[in-house]
Amino acid sequence: MSQIINYGSCCIDHVFQIPHFVRAGETLSSTGYAIFPGGKGLNQSIAVAEAGCAVTHVGAVGEDGRWLAELMTARGVNITHLGITNTPTGQAILQIDPSGENAIIILGGANLAAHEHLIDAALNDATGDEILLIQNETSGNEAAIRQAKAKGLQVAFNMAPMNANARALPLALIDYFIINETEGEALTGKTEPSEICDAVLEQYPHSAVVLTLGPAGVLFRTAERNLSQPAYPVETVDTTGAGDTFTGYFLATLMKTQQVELALQTAAAAAALSVTQPGAATSIPTLHDVNQFLATRAS
Image (tube, rainbow, N blue to C red; front, side):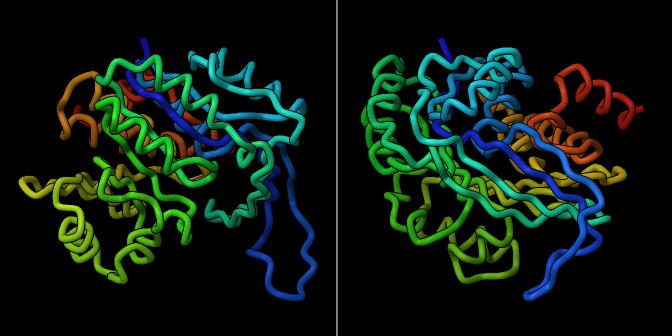
């Protein structure tokens, strides 16, 4: 039985290495190109599985994305509720600059096809002890949230990409808001991390806020708790998928141990390791590697 049900996207990532982000009206030669598996949902499911937590991925790919399904299976993800559609798989075009920062364009593709029957089936199998993880690259999130809460599940929302659709969802039902500074500002109108957390909790006092701050680490806030976790300094190659790696490892470790501090520490280490390798899903570390990394930092 899965501990986390992840209703999320699968994408084929087209990654271009560029000297700087393309400006309006500019034609720019790429210094490198590669195709990687990606999509926030796929990345998060693999991160959960690598962290040692049972996960079911709910979503869809086109015929051109069957290799993504095979990859998820190989990495330990249950794909019983992954659909194969006539709509092409979601696509992402990524620019990666010399510092490892990225700019991303996504095409929803099969991620935006009707998946109600898939999430219905997955939630019908749930016992109520699971977490439903959602993000904003798929359709049908409102129904998924309401059905999950009716079954007694907790709901974690990684609010990316942030848009009007995300703000229109029944956010009072969310247990964990997992957001970065940009998403936090769009949600609250605040720019300071502490003010973002305060504003979210003022509106949704029964929720937890997990605010990722890149090199500045992460904040965890509830009405009763105020925690911070520093980022681990590493040599950055590619930041793509770091947030997804953090999200998957955080929720998986939390489900396994019920220890927020340990979940934050483990997730921060996993995210740090992920940015030292190119790609999104391909850069997600194993739990063994994460534990070794933490052991070297403790010695």
